[in-house]
Amino acid sequence: MLTGMARLLVVKTTAGADAPERCSQAFTVASTAAAAGVPVSFWLTGESAWFALPGRAASFELPHAAPLPDLLDLLLASGTVTLCTQCAARRDIGPADTLPGIRIAGAAVFVEEIMGDGAQAVVY
Image (cartoon, rainbow, N blue to C red; front, side):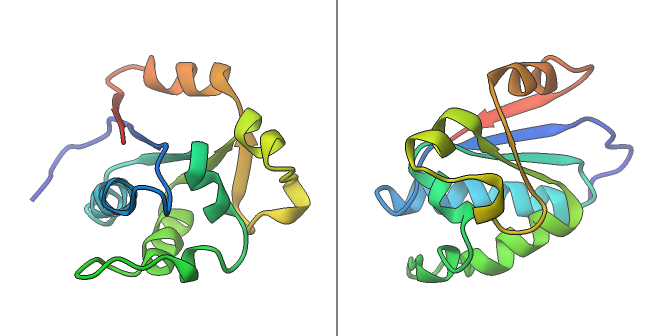
């Protein structure tokens, strides 16, 4: 059991359906931390950017893995989910296209988060 955890965990996933195990690991680690009460900032970059769109997480399949829509819902309810600005632009994804609660932000915000007092970052 985690106690006294106030540090921010920043998880950045670059993998999507192209690397399902890495993608699932990122979602699983972030959602497990969030469920344990750890503040989480989850970043969708690269191919994972597609999961910012409605219905995309539901199309993800990986045997013996928790359903991605459930993990994403947990992260949206308890943490911050961010879509990379450049990744969104390369895929023609705008704010009106994303699931409610997903913000679009860039490298400056990512650096600010990972450099915060006691922050821990993990990249998948």
